[in-house]
Image (cartoon, rainbow, N blue to C red; front, side):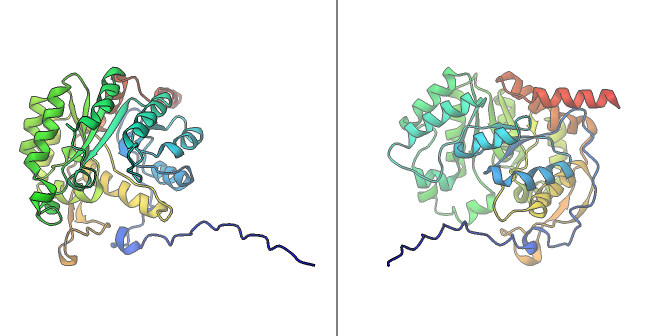
Length: 354
């Protein structure tokens, strides 16, 4: 008598938790209570990456602990419906392509995803045009291959978010071969050419326009492009560069308080539990809201071990925090037909009840 072995069921990989020395090298109690931001209404993280529905439990536990209510996320389409089902009031999506597979039909697939995300309520499209991505895909913003994407965006009256540039230390290091990666000036000419071509399109420059090291450049762009907003996402980048010129950065935020959106660039992962996620929220709240001066719990791989960043909090005025956490993202989303109306109404009802 012969028997047939039952095939073993595939086992999902179990990743070890992220190393605490990388996200909490200072031993902070990341579960210690912290008051909510001094904001009337909900707080909105305008730039993050909740990648999978299974990451939602730790994500929202950490978010609730740090007083963050709603998220505008770049999520793979394959996970979007599950996340929307589980957290319908707290999540809105930015249209992204399938980053992991760059095939000959990539543009057609992106157009399909754009329509699918649009049907899920999205009204904003992300272009990732960092030096590394430009070199890898050979798709600058002015590429004829991207014209169908831009036509669809304009026809649907959507907004655009762009990741242009990268940390200055990367231009001096990994991107130092200008013949291969181009220069920052070339990258910003490309971006400005695109904004001039679409002057009526609302635009978001991710990560402080990709150049928090040069606030004069950012001021010039804000002055010349009235539809441009900046988000302050990217934890390690912001803690390093904003702190490095704290006083000028504080003045910049106050001067441009109507043009900046709060964002974390938080990224979920199978190995990123509460404490990892909380470390990012902790840094952002300390950096924007307080006068904290001290070491960051998060290791900065771009700096030597003996020269890790010191956070120098901006202690932004309450009226500025109100705008970057709530008023500006709420107004921007409303202009393009997005928003967190149910969550806002519930928050207002809760305030009235108390």
